Amino acid sequence: MRVINLASGSKGNVTFFEASNIKLLLDAGLTLREIEKRLELINEKAENIDAIIITHEHVDHIKGFIPFLKKYNARGYIHKSLESRVLKDLPQAIIDKISLIETYDFSIGEVKIMPFELPHDSISCLGYCFMYKDRKVAFATDLGFMPKLALDAIIGSDLVYIESNHDLKMLRNCKYPYIVKQRIMSDHGHLSNNQAAEIVLRLARHGTKYFVLSHMSENSNTLEQAYLASARLLEDSGFVLEKDVFLRYSRQDMPGNNFNFGEDKND
Ligand SMILES: [Zn+2]
Ligand SMILES: [Zn+2]
Image 1: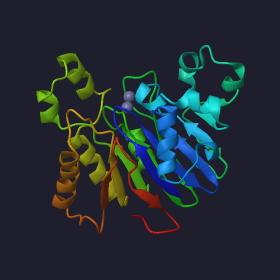
Image 2 (image 1 turned 30 degrees about the vertical axis):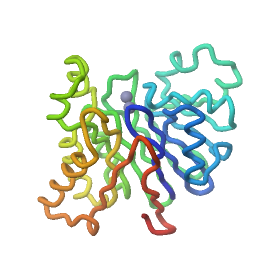
Image 3 (image 1 turned 120 degrees about the vertical axis):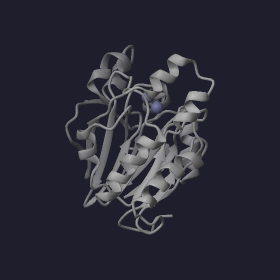
Image 4 (image 1 turned 180 degrees about the vertical axis):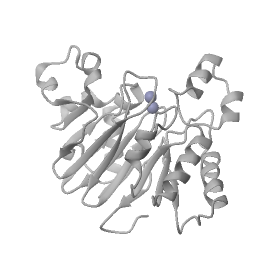
């Protein structure tokens, strides 16, 4: 199993996943050209992508989705509540390439996909676990808080991509209008660094070793602030970083760490 985030943040989200000869993208929130470029950076080709799975309909997750399906052979997977929004005015040939999913497990080849609902200000928002053999990776970004059902789904993952969107103090003082700040802080907005840290700690206590702090705000967060919030809580709770738990972060401008499970070592 191989996982690499290609872009993360409010300007676009794409993650590459590979297992058992299946190559997937989770979200396609960059332009088609930029998705092709980022795939080239990790020595992958867009024409070899089997499927694109979408979390929700915000533009930073879906921008390149339809252009990608128009150009390449991949299948698309979206929540059924997005049918009228996303499939509107599309040619039948493209509609036929899109599967409408609910929060039930499904498989692509030998990869098992487990969607779960997240609270966010979109029509619907899904997190996912991708499982192959005894390995499991979870993705939870774009959520105002972590519901118990979602946490239960994620527990036991080898690797978790978790949103660490903003530092509360920086958000309060940044240039966003009040209404936008309220939205981000709400139960249907985004996780703060401290909220992310609490979730990281709970998952680490259940055995997860690898975490990637994700979807960081460019205006109300820094890589250091996000990292320190989780790192301090883990260390205060007795975890040794780089031994018990490995904390990484994904970036907006370039691909992140390459995780290989069951094969080579992670970098
Ligand atoms: Zn987003
Ligand atoms: Zn969103």
